[in-house]
Length: 168
Image 1 (cartoon, rainbow, N blue to C red):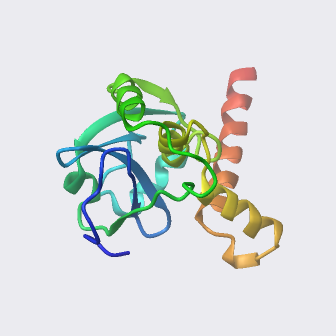
Image 2: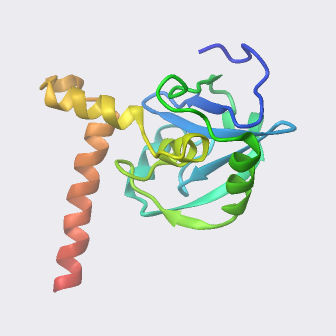
């Protein structure tokens, strides 16, 4: 990923490489992004950011792009522009700002940071990371299952442990 390929425009999706997965944000102008961040998600978390799969809640934050990116690479990636017409920028920004500071449900499989920003831009929550992981899993790729497949298995396992505690 090129770190500074071009200047983002308000409403652009920002894909940030975190090594094993991508974190997503939406550019809102003047150097700021809004993103859905579980407690372990930050630029310098390193491998501990993997622990985001254990969280069921995340907070919507507005931070400077360079702070969210840290030493990672990022790119503008309006990945679904061919599939869906982007919503008007004014509506994207209004809705993104309306979530600021709010805690939202979080699931690495169904309500992650990519779902959050694609819903803002297109009105449809989608995660290509999850779709790719499911395809990889379905293809039986063995050891190459990928982070999200492992994350899903961990979250299911831990979720079942929590349910066991609740029923005891």
